[in-house]
Length: 244
Length: 260
Picture 1 (cartoon, rainbow over the protein chains, first blue to last red):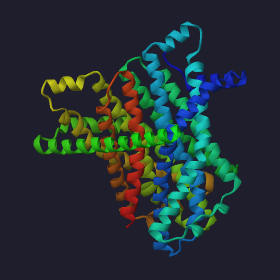
Picture 2 (cartoon, chains in turn blue, orange):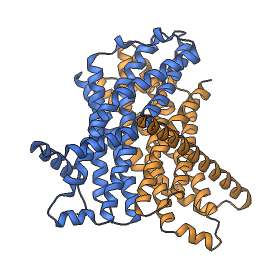
Picture 3 (cartoon, each protein chain N blue to C red):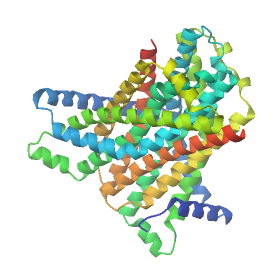
Picture 4 (cartoon, chains in turn cyan, brown):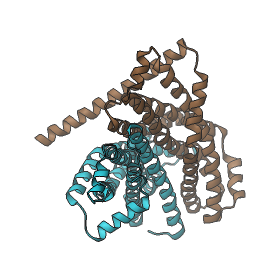
């Protein structure tokens, strides 16, 4: 198994789901591991990006318009639609994608994948699929707390730097159900993309130390690029069709 | 009770990890500065690294730039339509692509591409004991592997940011024309009228700073790798995560500093 394509991994995933051949225990275990390792990282990264976005917007609004009242609703909408899912995807590409690629490449280095193939089983099904499903679940679970972390960072920034009260900044009524669905769909798509890219990089790795490093690097790079491409594509689809 | 102690232990481990990484990065920067003062600047190696980092990252940055242009266009057109101000769309796209969102996304892409590549190379050298062998031969490994990277990556990042500025603006113009009916003439008239050169320069400075931090993080964690083949993968993963966090934090600090 020298090269495994993303399509082959996706076909295996669909096939396993169709046959309900999902190792639930392994999926739960992988979800718990990914969630516990990524939760604080994602919240911190979204918090920093949210705070800087808020600061820049408030500063420009005060300088140009002298009015900051519209920042709260606009900030919440752009965080929901754009930055919260984007940061969840990018962080998962770094942690989950690279980690999955490195683990799978290490299994190749120690000939575990070859042994499994000799025994007539499929390494994609056994090693990669539980982690891919776990990544999708994790991204869906992480999206709401990431958004909340961004909103809290915004509230703190506005209160501490611009003396705007939280009550006048927080504007959940500016969000529509479509925004929340869009954010969740983006996060799930990103979770799937980064894990498939990580699995592809890991299962296509050369079986030596530098091969493991290259696979982990490919996992991060391909995952991050996939997130950016899918983000632009989903934005374009929503702009053109208005769905969801 | 056990969960609480596990939580505290994991918080302690995280705090120790942050302090250890910060210490490693500071030590590395200190040693690299010492090398620069003591030894002549390894120009050939720096140029090699600029080429290795810049040229090999260009395809990733071109794809990322096209996506950044589309993202900026969608958000910019949304606001331009809602506030009935199509004449400011070009400026908004320029400001976001060249000064704010563009540099941030370049930093995140750099931490993935350059940081991971750098960490993978150095970790592979470390776990195969080639770094120790060089030290045993009396070679100053800092001047060979650290200093050129710390100088080359900010230079490569600045050049890549220039590419990103150009491509993302063209992409935002084309997307707005096709999807929103905003003509290229309107977009570029807005850029010419409202855009400031200082915003472009600030974006380039940000890119250089992100490049420096990506270099520091990846070099420190790559050289700190210990163990077998799996240690290389772990070093790459740790580098990608740490660089992303560091760049997000530096982005906040730069925003506060430059916004005044």
